[in-house]
Structures are given as C-alpha cells and as structure tokens.
Image 1 (cartoon, rainbow, N blue to C red):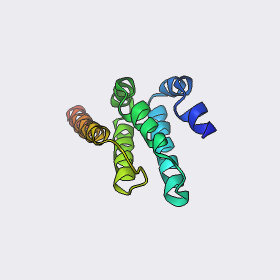
Image 2: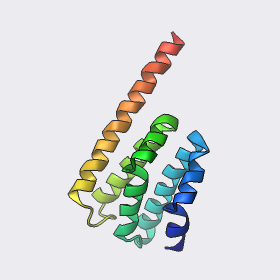
Image 3: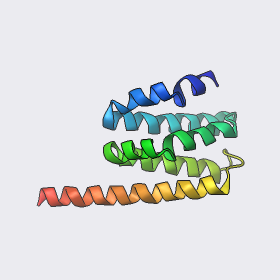
Length: 125
C-alpha cells in the first residue's frame, strides 16, 4: 500500500511522468497492468486501489488530455484494463457511474486512435 500512495497516485510522480511524453503514458499503463496482474494472481488489491487508478489515471481530465496528446494507446489500455478488473470481479464493487465513465473514456480513446490513424494516412499520401 505504501507504493500505491507514494508512487502510483502521488501527484508529484504523476507530474514527473508527464514530462516523458509517450514513454510516460506507457509507464502509467504499465502501472495499471502490474497492479492488475498482481491482484489476478494474489487477489489482495482492495477496491480503493482500482478506484484510485480510475480517478487519477482514466477519469482525470488533465491525464486524459495528456494521454490523448502523447499516447492514446495508453489511455485505451488503462480504461480497458480497469473495465476488465471489474468484469473479472477483481474490482468487486465499482460504482455504476464509474464504470459508465470508464466506458466513455474507452470510446473517447478509440475515437482519438482512429483520428490519429486518419492523420497518418493523410501524411503518407
């Protein structure tokens, strides 16, 4: 739990990650994956960890803006992994409003990815 508080949701750490652009987004997504994997094998991550990840990574407008500009794939992966945690009941009691918001983030990230794909096609032509 100390790592969760001192690193994962620490505003200073999150701010420092943003300086790394694409790689910083990758680090945020990897953090969610590590916690998910640890919980899937050891089943010891309490719900407040998933709630914190959702709040600080996927539902924060500031982080969504950062990821949308630097690494939309990371935003997609974070939202998808948190929804998977709820579906697999690792996140035992997520609020319906939070799940709905995560679904919207997933859709938003898919829209960003499609738009980036279109821009890449225009550049290539």
